[in-house]
Amino acid sequence: MITVKALVLEKGKVLLKETPIPIVSPGELLIRVIYGGICSTDLEMVKGYVPFSGIMGHEFVGVVEKDPEGKLEGKRVVGEINISCGDCSVCRRGLKTHCPERKVPGIKNRNGVFAEYVTLPRENIFPVPEEVPDKDAVFTEPLAAGLEILEQVHIPPSSSVGILGDGKLGLLVAMVLAEAGIETIMLGNHPEKMKILKPLGIQGLIAKDFQGKMDFLVDCTGNPKGLEFALKIINPRGTIVLKTTVAEQTNLDVGVLVREEIRLIGSRCGPFGPALRLLQKGRLPVEKMIDKVFPLSRGIEAIEFAGKRGVKKVLVEMER
Ligand SMILES: [Zn+2]
Ligand SMILES: [Zn+2]
Image 1 (cartoon, protein in one colour):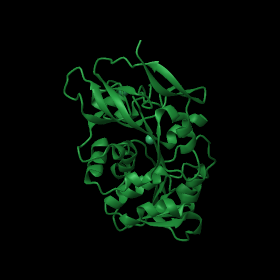
Image 2: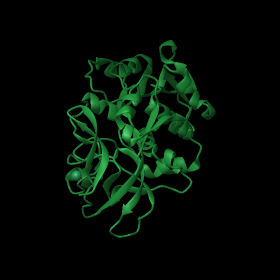
Image 3: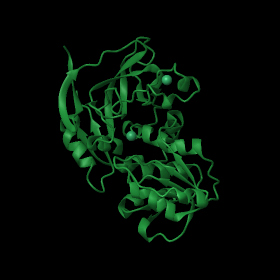
């Protein structure tokens, strides 16, 4: 049996293991992973945000090793993470990312990408444009999540917009909105992180010092306190987009939503095609977000390092 190295989550413990090379099911492709990106969701999974055991990770760039139709062999690709049934009433309504039967690599009922090889359905695969370097391509999934906000809400360019939280997703969301011509203020805690956004004209302020009010807020704090804070600084009839998923529960006085007529919108996965087009333009300083690249053999250390305060993106490089 051919085995491959993989970073596995088992009963809340991260382990480096030899696992069987994945079997390619009909309609799927075998991909040799180049880089995987560690996301806050991966760290939340280790804390037990959702029960999962198996190979970790969902952000990656790789090369197609085996395509039964031959078309994509040797091509660099990224992969949409929601693997839906395509057949239920939700899927038929076009809401595939909400399929109740969906599987998500490294998150729900499906092995993830922190391994030398992964399989994905053909319809989840997106070829990476030549101009996009490997390390940039790893950011496709979180950038798509940022673009989802623009799919969901209309933000007039003249409105006041704030991003709460200068973590990985917050920085990417700020970049996406800036590219759309929206003036954005980042309310964070780490001036050294917010500095990355300066070339895009995005102002970074320390959140607790902020005095004003905003029309739109995107909560990327990854903390239940983020929404509490957002409700304090949102204008009446304002909109709060929630990107935070956290292990802890929150106690929220929802009365304020009624009194102030505030819209609260949950936001998750977004479109890969537009995210790749954004990366193709080469204007987003995503590579500046990478603090460290670890080989897969040091994957456990990589997860620990990614969880340290102030650390931005950590990549895992698969060796072979
Ligand atoms: Zn992610
Ligand atoms: Zn379905």
